[in-house]
Picture 1 (cartoon, one colour):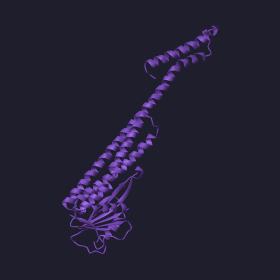
Picture 2: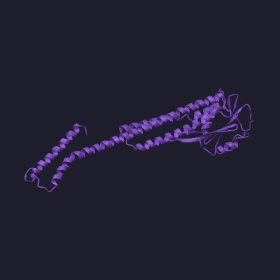
Picture 3: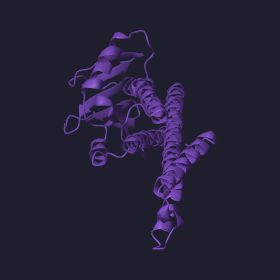
Picture 4: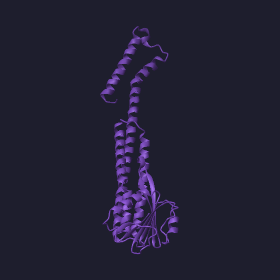
Length: 304
């Protein structure tokens, strides 16, 4: 697909039309297509750049080349769709893994006439549209983390908390890495080393960089939230373990006197109560009284 900006208006453009130096041109292609902007000296540069999918920025003589990632969240999982961009003086080439989202964007932009379009403004709308679902996904993650916190603190829903926490941490770490790389890319693009963007375009790029910075900060806050839940879960595990150990300690203490009595009768000595008819019943009664007294004492002191 080929478009042009003429007098601030975005228009579709045929491949057979002559290039006008006063117009700006935008080409949208899918990876693997050979139909790139020709006659611009960019084909070799772009084809070599397509060999790497790293999110990055490269400044060449008279060209800015960068790759950024569009985040999608099928079934709330992270999927990266990379778009390679090569920006020249008065032209822009986009090479996408999937053309459909970009084509839909341009079809929408064609309906928004009356705007003073520039290449920088188009880049801003492309960035903003492709990251439109990011905040919604972060809000979903925040809800998931809040549910996990309630489950950990109340213990109502038995689940593998460790696995859930690890999954969330990995998910957030991947998001943070993408936003961090995108911020580096936008910072380099704002440097405008080749002077390919005007002041208005740079303003839009900085607005988008501020949005990504807010998303990056939100991810950092969610990571801290998950860390707090992990610490709370560990504290809960320690409390439960202490409760179990306390219970067994109390049980051991209750039956310790009975162990002592059994030890006395196991010494093969002639005990005085051997000659008394009520000797054994008396020992049994005393043992029961000792156990009852200990239970009352432990209950009174709230040891269990």
